[in-house]
Amino acid sequence: MLTTAASSGAGRDARYLAIVICGLLLGAVFAARLVFASALARGSASSYVDASADAMCGDAPRHVVIVDAGSTGCRAHTFEIVPGAAKPRFQLRAIGKKVKGHTPLASLAGVGDDAVANAIVPMLEQALAKVPADERSATPLYLWATAGVRVLSDEEQSSLWASVARVVSRRTRFRLGLDGGGLRVENERSHFRTIDGEEEGFFAWLAANQLSGRDMTSVGAPDAEAVPQTVGALDVGGGSAQIVALPASKILSPDERGRPPADLLELKRRVYVRSYLGYGAIHVEKRMWAAAAAAAKARGESETSIHCAFLGRTEAVDGVTLTGTGDFDACEREVRAELRALQTRDGSPMRAPADVVGVGRFLAMSLPYHLTRFLHVALPDGLRGFPRPTLSSIKAGARRACATKWEDALAGWDGVDANTATDRLPGRCFDGALVTALLEGGDGEDGEGGVGFGFSPNADEIEYVEDVNGNDVEWTMGAAMCLIHPARMGSLRCDAGTTGGARNDGATKAVAVVVLLGAFAVFAAIKGRGLDVKIPMVVPKNGGFRKG
Image 1 (tube, rainbow, N blue to C red):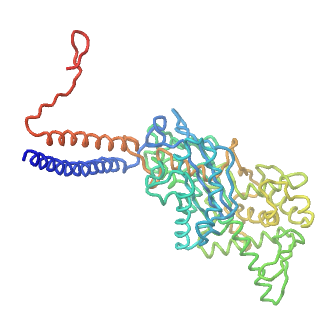
Image 2 (tube, rainbow, N blue to C red; image 1 turned 30 degrees about the horizontal axis):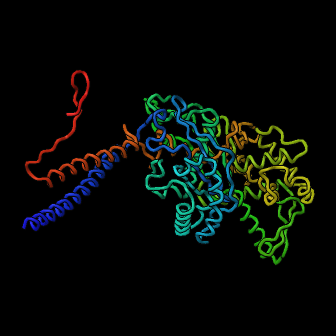
Image 3 (cartoon, helix red, strand yellow; image 1 turned 30 degrees about the vertical axis):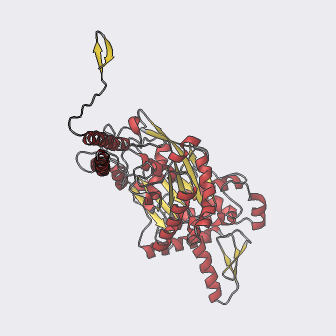
């Protein structure tokens, strides 16, 4: 009987113990959720946290990889994040040169995960290899696309990004997750997305100014002064063109207080940003070539001339042979007509306000730099004034280049410029007309003007650059700045008064307290009433210590 009773009591104790443990587990989960929810509520408003204490306001990775998925290919940039104890609040140091992938992301829509992996994983692995081995799994990746992917349908983009997310999460070691890989973005979709033209332009402008010595890391800081005199940015790629500048009238707020911007979002609202999708070199050239072929077919011809190609160069388009005349001036007129048609179709005039083109210095990057650099190394006496040639000088150089026989151009210029690959060399004649038509104003009265951003043909305020002080001037650096900036914009928020690491630590402590208290309660319940528990303690005795 005693054995049976003892067994019955033991069984009851075991069941009681199981019930209590289950309750403890539920309580621990509930406590953790309460602590985390409270932290999120506190972090719902943007605030400034000094980067000298914690540049990332949480689990701060020391590196981040940003990929520019553009119209002509992908380029991966690896940055080291260096917190600062004073201005600048943080620094981004590019590690080595960008890693290039030659497959445009847009061309991978609908091809399947294996093809996507073959195109992007080698590039991503090279970019991650620049990070010390013990920090690679903590390094987040942001693969963002521009104009090339913008032209895809929403359904095509959604399918493409789902494939990219699967490939990166399964075949690389990058840190991804709901917390944005430590960079406090809303969800995992922020790692892989298509950015709009205004974002791209603002990112490029931010990078250009930071690299030019303007401290953009202090925007939104309690001791921040007015934004200094900034430089403008001009960017022309394969799919779009952007102009970005901060007019003098927008440096301070228009009210009587004259405040500097409180965060990056307010700064972005003050900056003049215009992006023109479809105005990039690949898109415009493709349309003009197709139109020339279609016109020839309509006339019943199998060949025709085209002004925007080197003299004597031939190319087959839609069954029609196009032969270049090398006539730069005629080419520029045709390019202006195409841009004017785009403006009419889109209802988006290009002419920038006078206080925008008049801000002073502009940095022109991507195609404008590639064109002017090519002309400078290809022409016997270089490009006059480079890297700050006037638009008149660029026209004169492009006019000479276009009139060169294609056989001579191929023999003499193939390989002379690192940014002019063999397959791009034929397009440099057209590039000259496009760049000058985009940047110059035209008078708008002779049927040939009225397009372009409005820069004077004889002014030298535009500097054509690939890097500043050894750093690439590309929108990827500006994007990284916006991700880690203490006064970040949009969905990128920072906790007020606490860090993400503190959130996690608070939840852990709450769970630990609940579990310890519950364990003691279980122990007391099982032992029953009259329990005599002796807990060893250390107490002082005669100036020393003993157990009691």
